[in-house]
Length: 292
Length: 233
Ligand SMILES: Nc1ncnc2c1ncn2[C@@H]1O[C@H](COP(=O)(O)OP(=O)(O)O)[C@@H](O)[C@H]1O
Ligand SMILES: [Mg+2]
Image (cartoon, rainbow over all chains, first blue to last red; front, side, top):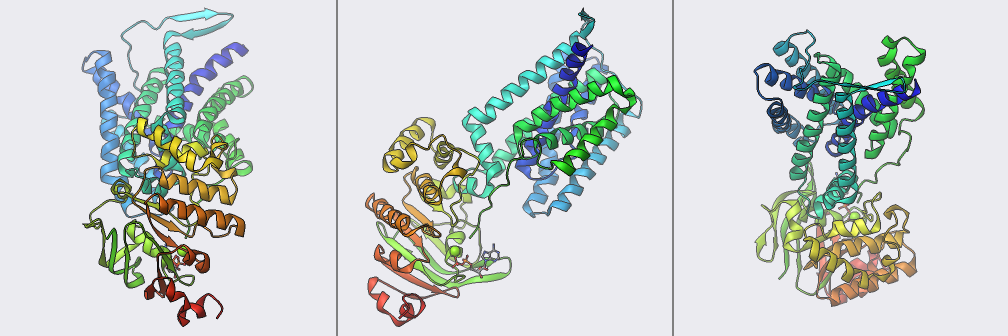
């Protein structure tokens, strides 16, 4: 029983951690809460579904979904985020922009694909492994593998590579980073491409594991937001930890509570953290601003 | 002439701070900018780095107008800016702070320059792996100086490096600035601590309410305007 909970926690947790990492990377660099990120991620799942339904090879469909999401991300930045950035829009405006964009993307999905649940059909048989009274499907194994390896790669790129150092300095003090020669817009674009890729992977894995419906995006955003809050919004690795912890709490709660309450648990945790530990488990102190 | 600020009017939003300022820095000089709080000293440096808005006038570095140059390219031209307030990256290590100073260098060169700068700032060597936030004020000031020098700039813009530090540390900082000058780097130094700054200055500008009201060599220190503002005369 507990083994099954742990396995399930890794599946949900890995997904949450992945989306939360992209979410928190966007938040920390672009300095606004990207409430559209879940809906954006789900787009990739829908596109894979679309490419499947027109009989493109599965792997080509995946690559195309990645590309579509990256292009969509760049378009969103070019026509929307960049404009608000240039105008130095306040945080309330950015908050509303993020929410509105999320609703817009969700409605777009609804308009294109309709409200019915869609499932992505796989090109191979999804075998189930049974052991110690627990079970794990091949897809679930792939989900765990991909999300874990992507998390590890991202973590090391951010903390061990020169490129990651630039991103961390940009997060820490964008103006000082610019003074030292960092082209902010250029890094923004690259981060956007990278977070779009994370979103695409997350959205596709989510679509395969849980099926697709237009509102899935909002759900995913809330999971990502909660995971990031648990780990501390300002602290990148915290979101990874938060994702796994949230996955674990959800799965263990199913043992004691009706499973319909699984999503309700997320809100309780979110509120508890916002009230008692708004800076997250690792409570980092605030950034120092430039003065003078 | 290395840097020429001509008839500069600049400020924030619609609010002008500088009203027709003229400042020149020649190669190898320490030029000191003094003046009371709020006179616009920092704004002069901020206009060079496009942090303050420029309404009129121009800034010329090595015969090139800076108007069309992006902020992130100024360091590539050879201008290093060390802002007021010891602006470290607090959550990065000392070493990472230094490495960011050499962002524009390739890996090989960066490693070389980092080793060299640590020779010049040996005290930082023992602290490389510490989070920069835990350094003392004096150490942080040395760190931002080292970070600003790692690219071998031709011009160093220094804003109030001695602010809030003990007299002993201030002395170290001013000695360091002289050492930097002896490396052949020109310096535009903004200082509240007029007396100390003027001791190491080649030329001095007194800024008041956004205008340079007095300039010249050390001899201007005896001018009644400066005596009145600073030296309690
Ligand atoms: N970011 C800013 N926005 C608006 N006004 C500013 C800003 N920074 C400085 N000022 C104003 O500009 C004037 C000059 O400031 P500053 O150049 O920092 O003076 P100094 O460095 O000589 O003490 C002051 O009146 C200050 O209040
Ligand atoms: Mg100042």
